[in-house]
Image (cartoon, rainbow, N blue to C red; front, top):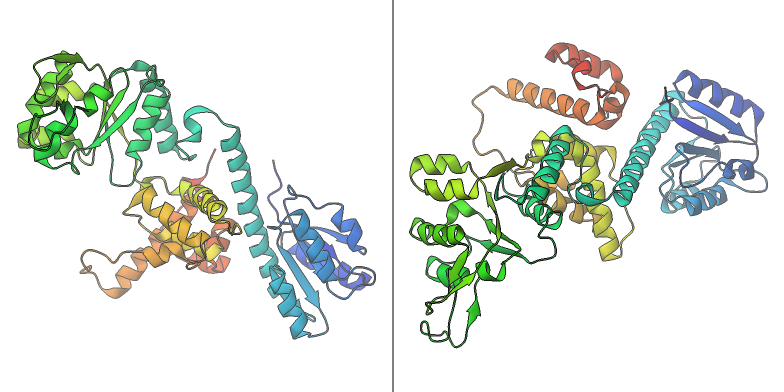
Length: 452
């Protein structure tokens, strides 16, 4: 089994300090390797070093600040904690400016040191996991590069998309706003037999009813006032490719019969023309609600529904795949930082706690916006800044509301950390004893969240 203990390289020129720190951190659950020469420690550092660096500042030859600079040249995300017995405030400020994770003054409280090391180790673990996942994504091919995530719901969606892409049948995609329905539609097209042809999208809610026929069917010159020349409609343009109806539930009922006929006959007549032209397109539709409910309500034609819904895909909301939030946030924020020429900033533990506690009513689209804000430095707790107030206040007493929030936050953290108690302690930034008490109070069993 892999050793999950935090790995620490400790550099100090005093034997007694090396011995005491090694013993204390060992009792605190860390793997510790000690060095009296900073240059020997540097030999262990690289972009894939999984641990952290702890170093004294005042040392002969190479001091701690130079070691910090050399270490960050090898890996800018490496957490470095510096120790000094000289109480030099200016030195501490300079160390933090150069990227030190923490700065402790000797004599330090052992618990304070182990707490800082544990936090730095958790940060390093998250960075390494995200790097590994990013490498897997960069090395992956096909749908896995588009529909990102490792949670069971997104893995099931990828399997269904892969199967339906090759089937070349009409598909209805159901999901909340911002879940990525158009991305799923593009995957069905790009990995299907029509990939070399056009992918044409039409938003049924964005096109005025008076203009829908012109947009969908096209028109000939002089068909109506303002029609100065011929225009190819969406369906004709999508011939042999894919036509994507977004927000299909918004299509006016009066137009549904006309659309149905064209889809059945696989031909289209432009407005102002009596000549039929081929229009054989695969139809992929997206809806924010269950179309069968719209059929029962009489707002959507049953025959059109069955024409469109040969197969159906459901895109899960972000709250049902919370374990994907850290990966998605890291991916989006990294991409945004590169796009804007900014330094990549991994989220802190408090950032992750805020991200995991948020309900994300805007789903992946909202998360992507939060990641872009984070990359631009517009608030370290982007998710918290975008949290929306509840639609209606609870009738429960305040104590009950607080208890409910605590329970949800702890369960969410366990889900994100795969049942790892120590990781939850670091993520929520609470003592282990406090977490145990709250788990007992709320009946939370960590075994429910263990990953195979």
